[in-house]
Image (cartoon, rainbow over all chains, first blue to last red; front, side):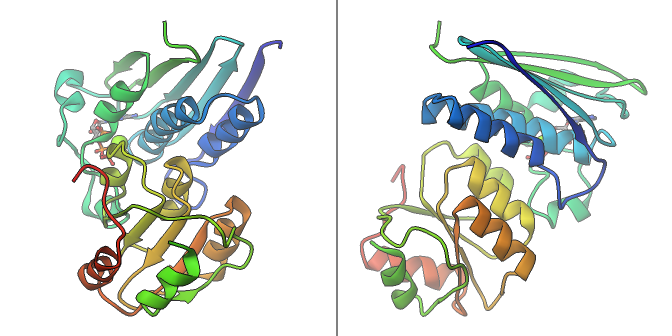
Length: 142
Length: 115
Ligand SMILES: Nc1ncnc2c1ncn2[C@@H]1O[C@H](COP(=O)(O)OP(=O)(O)OP(=O)(O)O)[C@@H](O)[C@H]1O
Ligand SMILES: [Mg+2]
């Protein structure tokens, strides 16, 4: 199997399509015969990062590379950035407004949930520049 | 428990048509916060919720949830029904509130993971 590469736009504040990129990637992994447990962990990590880009990052894009050993996902936005990443990683910390809470998000669980499900998580963020979340999941845990 | 048995117990309308009627449901979770559903790693095939928007269906897809029950008389829009049908997720709607619907299913043998 060669490397599968995909790029997706993540529109800002559009809740009807938020999660579409994660949904596509999930389908690809399933078609490739990746085990359901790995598909689920990848889906959770990518979906949380995608929703964050929609809610907090003014939208952005997703770049995905799949080879026979792993999936690498890069979600980047040019939003406000995260001033204190350590604080943002804590469960329960959220700056989401009430309008987002009414949609069922904004509990401050996303980043820690990404960390729990990814094998490698690397977040690059700069205030007023944007945020890039790099996620790797191995198909056979090393 | 099959979908039609669940529908009977909580007097729910089945809103989707093309789901697999033979899936067996053993466990469920009830939540209005999708963040909580995402963070709860145990797999449950059934979600009961008072929240009604397309993200509920997306979240269900990501979490391998096969059946979503909307409580307290909320009815999914046609756009949500077709989205769920495309993903093979069944949507049910009941007039019971969340606690009562959950209790009735528990009483009939559906359990939560992690008890
Ligand atoms: N892409 C991003 N751009 C700017 N800020 C972000 C971004 N991602 C996360 N944050 C900040 O980090 C906080 C915590 O993020 P996290 O995903 O853990 O929680 P949340 O999105 O607020 O709620 P939940 O994920 O539970 O729905 C956010 O409230 C926000 O302040
Ligand atoms: Mg989040």
